[in-house]
Length: 294
Image (cartoon, rainbow, N blue to C red; front, side):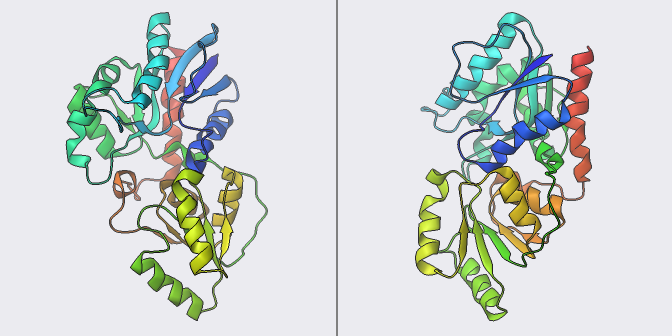
């Protein structure tokens, strides 16, 4: 079967760029085609299933007024409406809701335009129990399933390496101006630990931080514009990771590297259940295969 996956890959975010690699690895018996919000003229006629995901694509950020449709949602609707029109199965895989910082309480209004699609999807697998709760609350469905993020299944073939560095993945409070991060940096310097700032976000998000790192900490190594394999290699070879990005945490856990995140972190990091085995992420694809078998 030809399966169209619709997410946010191709814009420079390492986490989003990891999903197509996982989809191809997990579904070798199927033809995987990947789309994002750069819309095609139309989906190929032989697409047999549309999958929205993975990642935090369930949002309506930028809508004016709040309960209108954002440009992002209109792009996602293009694909969902195409699947509905053709009568082929479609749904959400390894997705998460995503809100602006400190706007979690307004999710019902912000997500209102998503409700008809959450009600009509053939399947829904989400990456946190909190996301499952919200999906049920706003759609009335009781069959949305939770599994850890699909990127936990990403396992590039890497030679054993240990560079001994502390890797900092900037985002949010993990930035060169933050008082606590500067406190950590003084401690690392006192123990002669090399520091690497690893950008896992798009240049539009991380650019100002990297420029400031280069000015404030000229001795630090900066790695940017990387592929998932390069990011995974850097994190897996580290002695310690400080990350403000969700997939910096995912790669650290996958690599069994100690890590910390800020206490005041965005929604998706705050609700991660570290007690659930990472291997349970395979459940997303068990659900998908069940749908394919009919």
